[in-house]
Image 1 (cartoon, rainbow over the protein chains, first blue to last red):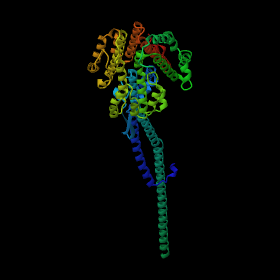
Image 2: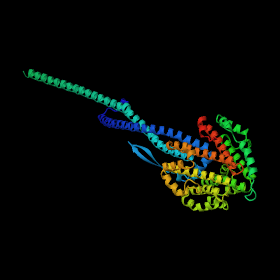
Image 3: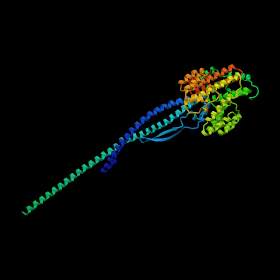
Length: 229
Length: 348
């Protein structure tokens, strides 16, 4: 509230400094928000593609697995899975996109060649190979989707935060500061006008006093002249 | 039973003919394709599979119940075959049914390797081979791969597994052990077969099975691009390839296809081979190989009705019945259409 601020020149200067800083911050945050939105749109396109791939790969993998379970039997598929030695691994690092720290997920041992899956070639079939291939493909897409969608969510949170900050500056802080500045300026001008008025009054009073003194002196001089005559 | 003494092909074949007549017909498959998994289980309860469905009904449900019942019924029939055969007949049947011993050895090794509990390994065994209950129990008690191999000492798998153990210890993957088990099974099939007109034709059938196995593995490798020494997957005993030829053919899939096309199997496989050239998947080709093998065994069975041939034809048909019913049930569970499921079945 403007009335809470003491209308002093010092406060006016402080408010002017804050206005300058807030305006600069507002511009910077606006630029950041626009930049984040542009980056987000790129990631969104990528996320949509990855999500489509994920759905398609899931359908394919599930179908191949169903086929393998149907034709080879659940027991054979489970047995082939149990022979796996090198389980997939993921490592996470982070990268910075316009101040937002997003994960970068690296996977290893996901795609395997026929000799790395652990089950013997002689006692298995192409159905199990194709189900394993499809699931490896699906796992790679899941890892990519996790990376892209996490980045997207973090960007979205950051955009929201930045937008709230921009709005707070634009619609709350800066208007309040402008109001305070205007209030103090008005008060100071008023004080100045009052001061001028007061000075004028004092001056007029002084001049009146001086005139009275001069008049009294003139009268006493006239009286002295009459007495001497 | 024993491998010594006189053989009894007449008796075994009479029993096999009766069992063959009880196999599901095409019409029954068509009925099953329209049913839900629970309806299939119900239908099985009123058929040949009644006992297994009732025995396992309290432990399993849904398609798992169907699959375990099918496996148990298969094991029962094949054990019966071993039970009523004698002499040379027993030996020939046992050799073929050792594929289930190989399956059980691999299942136990995979279970031990992955740290599965005894009960879940036991559930996945198919007790249709030569190993009896007490021997399988001894294998199930093993806590390490080395213990499993030690327990197999004295069986056909003992020495080859011992030889492959070093590779396993180096790489810590089961591939060398599993390949040793499967290769031993195939090589033992042909070892010291006696000579007679029927057995010679049976040998041709086994050679075809080995050729098909080598061909499909070579095609899988050619498509996957994996760099594996042919010695690791090649099975000796076939007519179509030797290890060196196959190594070259894996590098050139077109050459591999034309070698199969030019072989004695070319005429029957020409359709699937044409499709294979444009297809991304090997599955249809594998199905065609299974179908050709099944037809081959049936033909042999008709040519020599009092030999091992009708018995092997029955074994393949029974396995096919189990696979077809399982495919229908799993297919229905996964929501596949009737046409899709029918496309996956191998029906003669």
